[in-house]
Length: 385
Image (cartoon, rainbow, N blue to C red; front, side, top):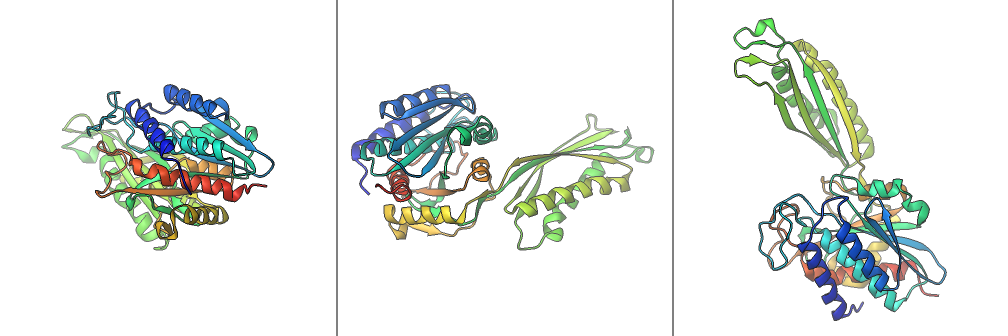
């Protein structure tokens, strides 16, 4: 599929402008304004304000099915340490996850399709705010995304270091893990550190609980199940000679199967209720259910595979990969509507910096293949009459 050089150059300029002016979740006012202006300039109907700063552009050509393609727009609270010409102009904020590139690819796809119109049906271009920890996808759904813009399927992509630039990577099932968080409050009895028998030590209970929680994955789940339980914070005590009254543990749970997710939640509850009792300590669990598993519909994934093969060649398509234990709020959209989520490799001659790294910068070389895949998918799913 031929994507014009001028369009790719425009998309690169848009991407670098977004990179230079990053905005955090639900604060993407300048970004969403620019996205809306560009879409309107392409002759595309625009709806603003869904999910706060979200934008939906709609392009109709004749009668036919309706699909959506989504890009996230928000940046991260990270100080950029690299020195590209388009370096972030906002202290403590940068596009370290490539959402500037996702937005530019979808904008260029919208412009390309608005010119060629080699399809019959409707495409909704969904520009989502607040993917990073703030569940902007869920907010757009709650604001009526799929009621206002009914779709037969929805698709999304994420750039992915570790794969060659332009390679499309997809699974017919899970792509990324669920994400839940927990807080455990342990309450014992404070006392002098020299007289531990007069108290009930929550720190010893916390230490045993950290070890016990690790046995959930190693001994309570099948080796064929995928889960990670991580205690990432322990807070307790103020004085070096005092056994404190309480301790707080916080952490995350990530799983690739929804039944495993439910089982892990139940097992953590059992440990928190039972293990501290042996130390005279009471445990209370607060469990926060977060992002679901990002799981592709097999048929939708196969459609993306077919489109990618046509757009970039079979040698540049990887069908079947190890899912990531990181998480993605596009999972909410896939729960509400069939669809698929793919990775787009970004490693050039030199490997890309990791996502969320202060030296990360999106590889503009993958804009063209990204646009080609999305455009081919639209033409494939919405064949011209």
